[in-house]
Image 1 (cartoon, rainbow, N blue to C red):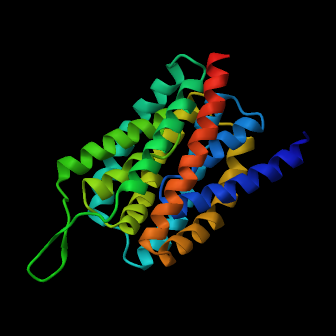
Image 2: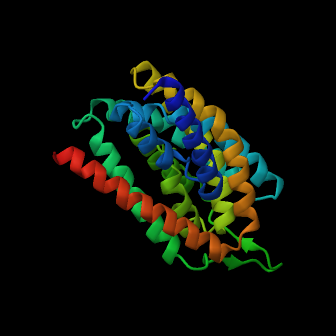
Length: 262
């Protein structure tokens, strides 16, 4: 396959990466990682080269969610900074972990399956109500920091942005509405992806032949995805999130298990 054809296909993957990021708040690497793996990247490059695209796509999508008041700034501050602090450790662990990156791919598929299940069966997010009728969220700093540290480690280790953990954590533990959880997660993954990208670059795991096209086309994709998610009903959004992530996790996980055990 010629280089121009590969770049064109990576641009397409980048657009859908951004769209997935905007719709689900998960960073979008669940699309770009297997895509560039098929197009010639090594498993470790597939982990490291997807992280740069998360940064511009998260900015693009976050601006759209923020316009509708769906980004919780306190959550972004505590979770995003804690995740950024732990992402480098995850990147170093990924580079030194046995299996040449295939184990990370299998774990990514497992996390996608978990997120699909959690989102699809989550129902309505439980909330308490203040005297004035407004929702009361669990915004304890220690809880948010803990979520951020775990998400950051996974972001650096798997190259997925950390939103796969943050979206279910924000709905189940912090009690944000689904759209608030997606918009807030999207803002966090952009912050978390920065140190992870730098670490993978220093480790030689970022191939800019794949990273640049992903970054360029992820920006409009995230904008489109955020717009679609905001306009959708919570019920339909949950169904779409669960079905798409569930389908990807099955195909993706099966292929990587075969590669790991083969």
